[in-house]
Amino acid sequence: MPTSTTARAALHAEYSDHATQPALTLTLDQRRGVAFYLADTDDSVEVESFVRRWTDRVHDLDDFVDEHGRMPRADSTRPRPATAEQTLVDALTYFRQVGAAGGYCSYQVRRLEAVPGFAWNPRDAQWSSMLAAHQQFWVDHQRPPRRRATDPAEVTIGRWVAQQRAQHARGRLLPEREQQLRAARFRVL
Image (cartoon, rainbow, N blue to C red; front, side, top):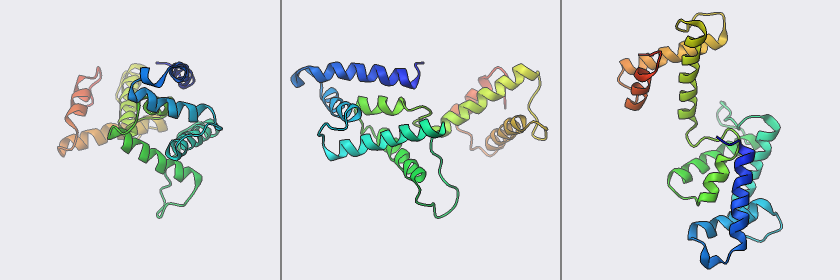
């Protein structure tokens, strides 16, 4: 899988080429993408206001990830404070909703995927990460993780296993997740 910088460079190279071609030779998706590409790479280019707003928000997201080394996280307090980070959390929610509805051109989809740490469904990504951590724990220690261990990482994995089993017992575990848990080398269920 290419790194986000490589993915972004490849995306920009592809759309740089599209931008030099006559519009009639491009698909509608490519023409839409060229507008976002131009706004993404040159602040002085005049584009429609919604293209500029979307691009500016993605640049804000890039800047935040570069500065903090992580994706923005929602504040757990209620009501949520109006911070720059919370604004980005709200933008991510919007990006994911529009993306799920198929409202983005290919350029926008690939540009968001080039942001380090971006996931269309972060809960699924986190779940998969915990399953991988569980499997690696077994490889490393040849035993299941314990919830009452001294190592915080082991405790986290042990609690995750307990949550999966509890969800399964209540009939709330998604069938595809149950299948993955049963198919794993070191089964959870």
